[in-house]
View 1 (tube, protein in one colour):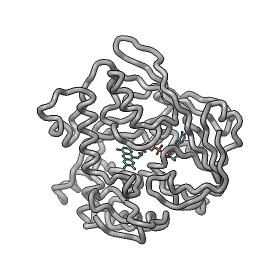
View 2: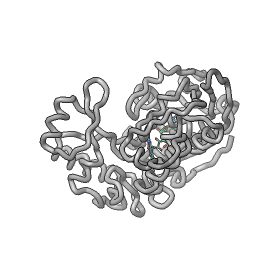
View 3: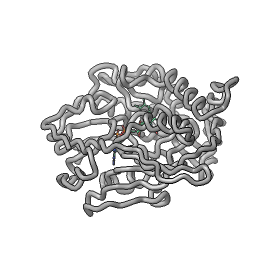
View 4: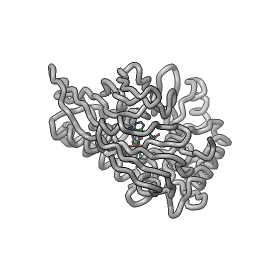
Length: 337
Ligand SMILES: Cc1cc2nc3c(=O)[nH]c(=O)nc-3n(C[C@H](O)[C@H](O)[C@H](O)COP(=O)(O)OP(=O)(O)OC[C@H]3O[C@@H](n4cnc5c(N)ncnc54)[C@H](O)[C@@H]3O)c2cc1C
């Protein structure tokens, strides 16, 4: 375990927001967990790669960074391969490792930043695939009971950018490892807009899909290494199917998809773009001119700038479409509590 006093958190969040904590503890092994001080949700924070947080205040207590690594092959039966992966592994490294092993299932989730441990939090998803399609169990440390708890698939309560860990009991569980079931046999999932076109003329393999996803992502999304951001800032809203139909009559260009429970998912990016908000700024925060769904740090942004800009976007979209967009990243604001 490594301990740092009064650490800066600027390099620990991809938005590049300046914040500090009282202490930073890097957890490097499962044994470290048993020696850790208690986690206090009112003052402490867990971070992986910091790619899905907005640090809107300093952290008054401790930031725990999960660095427990390791990938173990557990079982292989009839082409299905179970692996257990430490929460501190980098997500994209895991995707690349799986391709090197001739395994498929993760290829559509190529280049999502962050750690394996954070992936179940919001059930990461991209290009028509969600993490939930490959998860078997999530192993956690229950801070409250000071005990291990293994969540099976049902108990994770996965939903669109959501899970039990994110919204039902936030801050209670530290994810320590995730068990995945991957496949030797490749079943392509390339129905998502643009993906099949990007693969035209190529042999259809898991690696080809991964490379196509990487190309599309790099052409569309600002690179956080160059311009601070947290990826998509708003979720695509889901409305009753009848409401969706009415909106589509009014705004025929609005991209919409059928979603579970007779709902329709609408494109938040289109709505923001349609309001003419690309390039809008609040202090150092800006609506990306490359992708309307992404808020970026155009230089010296504070957490307050990002929140101000986010609420201006929410207000404009609500005025125009009658829908209040919901932020996707976790807003960390200890001055509220
Ligand atoms: C350029 C860019 C593109 C992105 N594209 C996508 C995308 O296509 N699809 C998508 O779903 N997401 C996307 N994201 C969001 C982000 O990459 C994912 O949500 C990712 O899983 C976050 O991982 P992280 O380790 O950085 O989490 P962090 O930002 O460090 O943490 C996120 C949340 O999880 C909690 N947490 C972190 N680790 C643990 C743990 N071990 N146990 C318990 N709680 C934990 C934190 O407290 C926080 O609440 C993108 C982000 C960026 C910057």
